[in-house]
Amino acid sequence: MITSIEEAKRKIEDASLRANKLEKPQFVSIVKQIAQFDPLSVYYNGRHLYEGKRFFWKDAYEPFYLVGFDYAHIIEKNKGRDRFKYVEEEWKRFIKGAEDNKTPFGTGNLLFGGFSFHPYQKEDNLWTSFPVSRFFVPKVLFTSYNKEAFLTFNRYIKQGESVEDIIKEMEHIEETFLASDTLPSQVHNRDAVQHEVAPEEWKRAVKHATEQIRSGEIEKVVLARELQVTFHEKIWSEYALSSLLEEQNLSYIFAVEQDSQCFIGASPERLVKSVDGEVFSTCLAGSIPRGHSAEEDEKLGEELLNDEKNLFEHNLVVNMIEKAMKETCLNVYAPEHPTLYKVKHIQHLYTPIRGKAKEGTTLIELVEKLHPTPALGGYPKEESIEVLEKLEVFERGWYAAPIGWLDGDGNGEFIVGIRSALLRGHEASLFAGCGIVADSDPQSEYEETKTKFKPMLSALGGMNNDK
Ligand SMILES: C=C(O[C@H]1C=CC=C(C(=O)O)[C@@H]1O)C(=O)O
Ligand SMILES: [Mg+2]
Image (cartoon, rainbow, N blue to C red):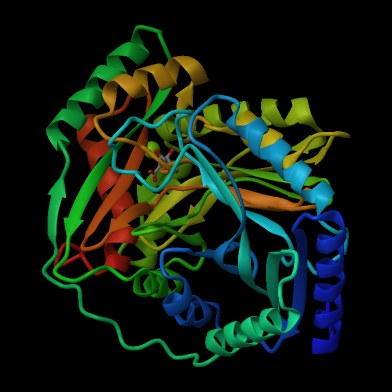
């Protein structure tokens, strides 16, 4: 970490000398501690310099935020089942070539990005800017963790580049980002037009799935659907983020801009986190709405905790994750019974699982092994995905897929991109799915997806009177 502008200059000069000597650009990462600042304001202030190249991330359990801009290094793959290994290998190669300096948690050269749900993308689908895997080291990264905040500047220094110009650019970015901590008041996005994509067909698909489950082909499949919402004005992700931060404080809040599209959401579901070899995963499956009063809420929670259909739906997830963790970790611990995880519109059955990574187990390997869990795909994995591919009428893209970050030491976290939407100008596509088991009733699963649309719908301002 640098403590003065002179130190930054020295680092850049050194890199510049190395670049000249080796005739190859040299990567530098300059981390500077700054006064605490509102992360969403940083995201907003960076719009003018970096619109279409920003990301926002807030942890569900800790006051940890990442806000990134532009790309210093990109790792991307457009198709292929080996996409996880590709990202892993390219990241290892990058880290090997970068200088080895210890920086505070969540700063420095850090990789952020995501995978699509399926290992392929259909041509001319909705997700034009979101390939099967896309990761990057941001050019500028704002990190806020507990009471501390940092700015990281990542870049390749080319032969003959002016050190003075680079320092000036860094100063300009810092000034711009920390210019103001008030968001202009929200544009009102009322009178949105909602269009449910093929709801009757979706219910028929649910019925069909239950028949296949009863015939013993599979045990569970997660079927999702799309809700399209058109607004009068362009949807600004900062306003949606502002509502999500207010309303969904127990969820991971994320936004990834890619050109004119933005994938945004408030996911309550961690896929896997690894810090210093401690591994944490979460089983979140089985749902019921929140009550209108504390009493009703508690009653609904009790009902969920004792409901056989939901417990079955949940336990398939626990068994799969526990098995995968036992293959890759030591001291795996899962509580015997789920508890409740309550977010604003819905409550879920929740079982956290933890363990200690075996020597050589990496975060990306864990992501590959776990994705998709039966909370997002089904059980057994391959067979249920085949059913899902046949029955779903929309393109999943990054919905329900791993999205997250990792650092050079192998620490990081991935969540699953649910309670999410893809924003495109005036239009938003929202996604929600349900775990279908033998006892699933199409109408109640349909109602469950309606509840799962609410976090994004409310954040976008498209709830109208449909509370
Ligand atoms: C697939 C979704 O939710 C999953 C996570 C929690 C509960 C679920 C359920 O009860 O069906 C789903 O498995 C979604 O929100 O789109
Ligand atoms: Mg369910």
